[in-house]
Length: 623
Image 1 (cartoon, rainbow, N blue to C red):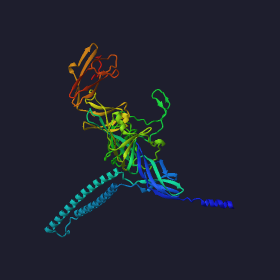
Image 2: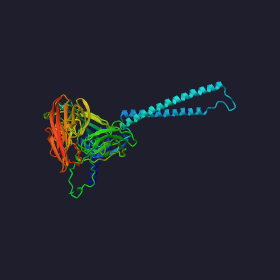
Image 3: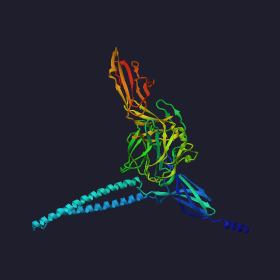
Image 4: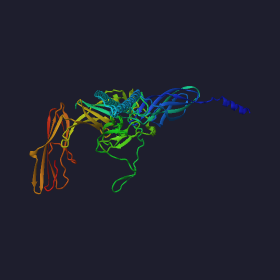
């Protein structure tokens, strides 16, 4: 009996644990934006009572990957469990701009309703007056004075009615136009429907009251960034100014206000497992691999695509993002849903995204691609990411280290530090930045580089009479450039867009700067040296051309001109190379290349002459 009593007393002496529930407010402090998706880091502080406590971290994005949630605590307590759940009772906060626009929309709707009702009243009065044309009875005459008075009244009143109807119709038209603009702006602000928030529930245990700090991180899909550049060239004796910009967008369900942003060239959605070659069995006909049916569409002819993105009702979708699959080349639609995108070599598919709509993956089969997006019915999409997607910081490499490699940092609008990871690199934006939850594209200037370049003009006047300028950059690998669209500026003028295609560059990055009309080239046929002769059963045709190049620029230029000799494909054909002004002839293609420097206002002439002998009963195209 004594033994039992001792045990009972021991049980009573233990502390009694009760579970309480308390809400905790957390703040986003840092976001790592990948080319597809983002990792959000939050911080919070709270006081934890004795026993078990269920901490509810509220106002969390509803679009998070639940498998990516990580919670770390600092304090004398133990984290027992972490769960995630939606909160349909607590909706996402809307901006004051959306609130004002919704008030304006409601007022316009009320105005249209009132004016429409007023218009119907005047139409009914008009109908009443038109039907009531009888004055007096059938047996009673009407005096001239009464008839004139009635006619004057009807004319005056009908005139007022028609005038008011016209004024009301104009007002309704103006209200409808304003309402359409307000609805379009609300759609651009992603305010078409109410959206829930979510919560992270953390159960902790403490033996005494204690203060605790929490770090929470998770991955969201509805975010990303793509590269964009301004390439400015003062003249062909100056370096290339590369202004490197990041176009960041997010519709995660929570605003990023005054936070530290890191841009990473990594993509957590890509598999981190190296592929293994499968059996390669040879059969007559086509080679067969054991990969099953592959989605392997290839585009080799389309280098620019444009179009319009709309919804099911045919309304424009502004600020939708369009990216080349597997690259950081992308753009966004304008307020009317239109887009234009330059494509690097090897661009096969487009990925189109917009908040609240299903993503579209579309093969690039045409230069014009118009798409209709469907609203998503899935509030939370599960995304499985590799556990190694987390970024582990390594030693930072200062931007100033590039100066030793002839690369000059001209200016840095937003201070950024480059950090290298085992398989990626990141840009640490040092100043706090804000990216609202609206899906729009916001531009962050990463850095501005002044890079030495070798300028060269290239022309093939047989195919195109213009001269094209290219800039070649060496040691470009040290610049950490990503594929992206580039706006071209040469000698102060905007030339258009090109693509910075670093994916297919080798030791030298060649950038096409477009046509330069100040270098003139002509390929003239010399009729006095062109002739046709008949020799027995054969005929011999001789052609002569003069290529004239004039440099109208103020600087000397390096120029490469290309032409070609024909290649005989039959034994009864014979090609004679008569003159090519010392150009270098490729033995396989018979392409002639002249490379030289041309002084300002100078002119150079190149000769091309060849003859072809073949049977006179045959026909050849020799020009």
